[in-house]
Image 1 (cartoon, rainbow, N blue to C red):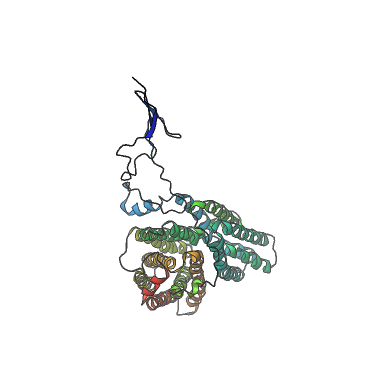
Image 2 (spheres, one colour; image 1 turned 120 degrees about the horizontal axis):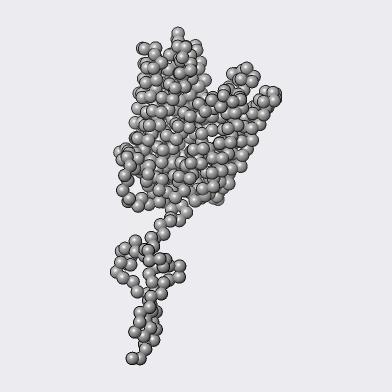
Length: 483
């Protein structure tokens, strides 16, 4: 029989059609030589006989897809399991939590360290207040640089400078440096990067086309905030009292630098930088919807700051100062639990209306500690009131941060998130001062001071209701979701 010429071709069966994307992308090569059919493997093909699974790795910046695998864990945890299917999300979250824990440690460590060595709470308060004021100025500028040049390029040197300031502060206290050196050292910590805002920016970038996932991500971040601010002061106080006064500050500095380096190393999930474009860009402060949001955050921060100081004063008045930390932890625990539950839900209705309802609910629940303190005079009753009141703060913050992401352009998102945190910190400072004055000078006891967080919450509700009466105009500013 005469031999026919060799013909080499690609033979595909019906399973390898565009309608079946799970079919192998690289089929074998077949060649006919005479009366024999010879199978030749493609270059790079798996010759072990096992079916090769398709490469499912998403390109950098691509929104991850839920593969549809059945979740066998608790039903409420399914949205969070879906959230962490994004490549690199677990790694950057771990680094971010390490870097975020010092946020709850630095102030308490500085106060204990300075007050213990200089025997002056006034000096300690003045130093930390000066650092807070510097953060309010430097924080948004640092965030603007992050938007322009990228997170890793800016946050690492900024964190290194802040760590240097913390170490310098510890050395100044240790070796009895002049008082002015304490202010200079602590001011340099104002460059501490807003890792919480950067983490929220990464979630917003990864899930820019998935509003439900962004809602879950913001809920998780709020619960992480509550956890860090609940554990941070406890860890700081333990380190400063069990070892030496500077231990809290030095440990916080180490954790900050370690966490920032781990977080910055996850470049795959980092939002791309947005270089300056020709023409004048509007500051996030001037965007429609941002002023009422920031003022609401300012009032909410005043709620947090005043509630903490007044509760400390109330516990001290009853002779249970040591239990004040546990009582305040109930508020943070209630907020963290509510945040996780809220993230697993899919609240209906427009986002702006939901925000107004959450702030109003917070204003109502903030009356519970006041009622408990004035009617029962029991610290346990106040703790129960704080637990319930805390359940309204997380939904408020989650919805508010989602609105910030919606209103702020992607090129200025880190700056917008940092402005929100700055407003909160400013409110905490103002609320702490006002709450302390009210607990000491108003009425016949510290319980009168609980009127301060109630008033601040009512002002926040009035601001949100007035600022978002007509939210439809916000839709023109962003296409990332519905207002």
